Image (cartoon, rainbow, N blue to C red):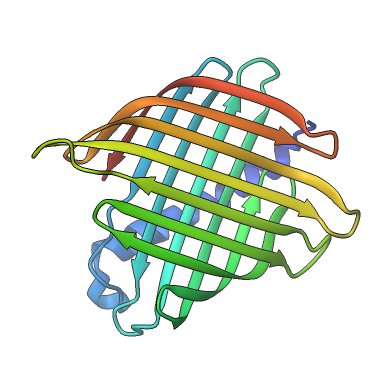
Length: 225
């Protein structure tokens, strides 16, 4: 996989600006019309083939009760070929019926840069469970189709300890050329103590039309910050 260093620098700069804006918004939500600042779900996976970092938050907009914001940023650095994968997305959701949203999104990655997209997502959140499924289409260029799924299950084992499990997957297809572009399945199994989860993790990645496989196994730690 060929990495465009200049594009990575540009994308990284954009993401850093975005994170800075988000941080300022969180410090004064009453000025932004947003609800109380959300907890950011920050995770690091140290594996045999890759170092992976991901943060996620979901945030309702206080003055517009049908709207919410979903943000996810994923960074993966492969050791062997020094390949870098950077994926970020900020999604504005409008709830048309309970838990089902129409979504507009600005996504970015280390290969294609910024892309506007349109899609749907179904989000179900409970104390012990989180479920998100989100298909979308690019509005420009190759008009990729992408489907994202995240499922967390966190049942109580005791007053202070929860089991933590997660399945997270993505499939991206180039419609113009009818080719596989990117897909992955990430699995986590561990224990949660208050706002920290630790355990075993695996990332199963597939790249390009040839579906080049990269499998990574290691330890993860996840924090609510």
